[in-house]
Every structure is written in C-alpha cells, then in structure tokens.
Length: 415
Ligand SMILES: *Cc1c(COP(=O)(O)O)cnc(C)c1O
Image (cartoon, rainbow, N blue to C red; front, side, top):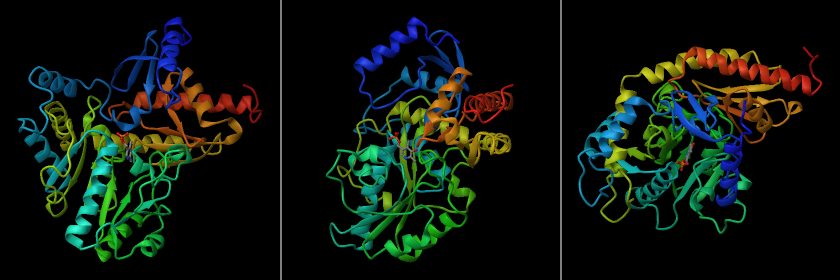
C-alpha cells in the first residue's frame, strides 16, 4: 500500500490545518466509492466496514439512487416548504406506509429528528396528556447516542460529548439501558416519553436483553407515555429487518429515522408517527428550510421503494448470520466478545493486543476500513450490498490482523 504518498500527506495536512479537529480520521484520503468499496487518491481500494455509520447501507454511489438524484437535480432541488413540491407527497406517503404510521415530519440530520421528537413529546404531554406547563420529563438510557445538539448532549453519558458545554437542558431522567425496573421507578405523572435506541450503536452495538423493548412498550402503555424508538442507525435494513423493533414485536409511537434514509446521497431524516402526535404541529411551530426538499424527497422515496422489496433486509439477515458465525470463532483469539445482529457487529478487542484504534489502523493497511468506538470495540457495519466473498475477504483480514497483533503482544508463537 502506498498510503504515505505525497498526495495523501498533503491532503491530510490541509485538512488538519484548516479543519476543526472534532474527528480523528483514519489516515486515508478517499476519492471515490462504489458498492462496498472505497478508493483513495492513490488508487488503493478498501472494503468499507463502516458505511459512514450506516448512512451508506445501500452501497456507495448506488446506481439506482444516484440516477434518481441526478434526474431530480436537473429539475429542482430546493424549494423550501413555502410551496408544495411534486416529490414530497409520494415520499412521505410511502415512508408513512413503510412504517405503518399516519404521518411524517421530515428533517435533515438524525439529531434534528431526535430534537423534533422531544418537542413533539413535550407538546403532546402538555396539550393531550395534560401535564402542567414546563413540568414534562423524558426518560432516556445510559450510554445513549442521539446526536450532538445542546439538548441532546444534555442527557449523554459520554464525558467527551459534554465537557465544557453546559448549562444543559433540564427535563431528562437517565436510567440504565435494559433495566425495566429502573424505568418503572423513574416514571412519574409528568413523564411524556421514553426515548430508546433499539440497539445502542455508538455504545458498541449493545443489544438489549430479551424482553426489554416489549417491556418498554408495556410500561409506556400502562403510564400513557410515548415510546420513541431511535432507529436512525438500527433501522432501514441494518439488522435484517426494516426496523429492529419489528424483530421483537414492538411498534413504537414514534420512529426516528435518518442516516440510510438519504441513500448515502443526501442528508434525510424524519419523525414518523400517528396523527395524535404529529397532527399537533401547526404552521410556525416547527420547521426546517431544507427539510423535505425535492431532492431529499426523491432520494428518500427511492430508498423506501428499495426497502419495500425486502431484498436488503434479507441480505443483511443472511449475510449477517454468516458474519456472526465467523466472528464467533475469533472469541478467545484476541477478541473477548462479539455482539450484534444482521450486518452489524461490535467486536471487543482484547486490551493486551492494543486499542481498537490500533487494530483499525492495522486493518486499514490490509484494505479494510472499520472504526473503533469506546476504546476497545471495533464496530463492523458493511454496506448491505456487500457480497459473501467480499465479507469473507474482510473477515480474513481481521483474522490476519488479530494473529499479527497476538504475535506482536507476545501472546502467540511467531509463524
Ligand atoms: C448517528 C445517530 C444520530 C445522529 O445523527 P446525525 O445525522 O449525526 O445527527 C442519532 N441517533 C442515533 C442512534 C445515531 O446512530
């Protein structure tokens, strides 16, 4: 590999000089992508096992999605919602039906969908449930990741995400993820919603204990509280079904969607729910200049159409089973635990081998892009269009990297 080429060094230096250092990227400069592959400025190819945090579930430069985007670009891209647009209606009807819900509130980024749902839950609490003004609270989970705005980090458990950003937004009660008794104990007459990731992605692909999500649903029903499922990363095929909630027989009041909803082409997010909540918004009470724009709607509709066939969900389920059967064999060989479902895995690296970051850099040298989270966890999430052969190629690389790291750590004989 010639990743230390002058071209890459120069690009990295420019970015580190002029760009805010709010990320710690892998040392590679990408020029193009296709399917499960990324290509750097020197022509080296990498299997993408990050998929831009699942924003690229349907592959880089997906030809069908790109064609829709290009066609729409030539017509009109941005109108604002001051007028109706021709692509907006078909998109939101298809998305509402995909979710089995009445209505859609379109936004752009994931955190905007989260923020919007918090506003909606409070509004529902005051105007429908009858909670006294300014008293509403929302129950959230420890270890959550819902985005980066001040209100959303106000209930983060991550010190890096919160350091020096106070004062924080009040009105959130944090309970341990997976602990139904703690939710039950935290609820009071002012509770308007429970916000939960069906699987905690950024925390390390943490799957909930069996019965947790159905339990949340039951508690929400019993106390007349909204259940908000943040499926921004777990949704849209990643876990082998359209929503992870489906697999445990749960229907939340509000779905939060983002990332893959934009098809890896544009940012598209949405809150999807029934009329009793989404119908509360009146003109002027919420909005977004770019939300639901004609380009986003055209691409979003194409994404919904893609999901309607079930092909991506099936790929994720079947290839995911293969991925997890292979990863399971690594436990005890440099890996301490593997979690996840579908084409989504959190792989805990034995600390004796070094950090997750160090492993991800070794993987990069072998042509695989994967990133660490929370120190020791490698997070794997290839595009759902990946082939079984490509999947095996990347797992082979991971096996090789682990074997090398074991030797380097003096934990395995050389050879
Ligand atoms: C990525 C993510 C978000 C935030 O999405 P952005 O588009 O980065 O604002 C929110 N919730 C979950 C579960 C996510 O994975």
